[in-house]
Image (cartoon, rainbow, N blue to C red; front, top):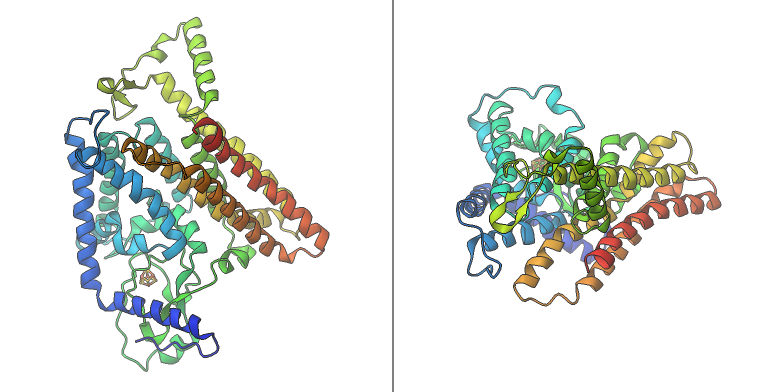
Length: 471
Ligand code: SF4
């Protein structure tokens, strides 16, 4: 189907290209099958989300194979969420385009809805960052990983919002995914190191336009296909594969996009999401529960509240949809708990994110002006480490669940250390490649040392959690 050829590449490379291109073409030809898969995922998602919320909470001795709530916890938080993050490093945003239930539902709603054009406020570039931060904070306040009603509220709320946005905006489009989804920004940056992407042959496109039959392509996430240069916005749905004989799924060097990112394409919102979101907020969200500093802060704040007549802060009368409230499990948050969780995560994000930003700006001083933009571009080099950190944080629930099932987890510390080392090494290599435009070798090395400060800080913060607090 695809007319693209690679005549000068090694045989093995050509073979993998053919294999990938065939997969892309298969997706294009078999969209009815893809749609069926998507609706099966929607059905499974609904069952896993709704049924546990109406069942009684599981006892301490419940297991995945004899309790549906524990099974759903495994499915959502133990496997689905960490491995969706991991999949971005392997197949880009295939999750979004082929499996994501919210994507399916918002697109279906958009088919029958009002078909309005997305207004300017909705297209604001800061939504992915803001939505990620707010969802993470709210998820921690209601203990989304632990309780089915909280999962229904957070995930179900997001799904309802996706359907409403789909109903109002676009025509068979995924306006929600493109602009508002709380994890679209995360997927967007992680997919930048994906080893596969739909590659566009612009010359072939121009050559063939008007000479071959054209089948209109509905690109649901609103990608300008002809001008696409990477997989960050592409949902890998495959609908455009083979279009005009100029679109082909192909392997690519996973480092190239970040290593050669033009300065003008470095976005402040992406940099903020990587440094303050994926590193800072994520660290705060996974730290607070294990942190002895949080306990000390809580004791000091409780004393202060009592001494100053603010005992209402110590009451636990907030409903479960505002703060965690499960007296039957001896798990209730006071108003003080809620305030301290938000404070702890916020301060961690600002301190770690601020320090990482300073290291990046220091590294950027070695390069030519504009230095702020150089610093923003260097933030992209942290993508592997940031993504691996989030994967490890999310998979800590997988480890907890595995231990409860009696599965041995003795290899976990070594695997964590290995993954953190791989993320650190990968990020350092990306930064080194980005710093190729620094004129002098000594300045390039000095910039790498400054960048290594950001890497060391991030690795140290995850290490503190995994190897000191929560062993
Ligand atoms: S560019 Fe659009 S149509 Fe093509 S694979 Fe990506 S999401 Fe699908």
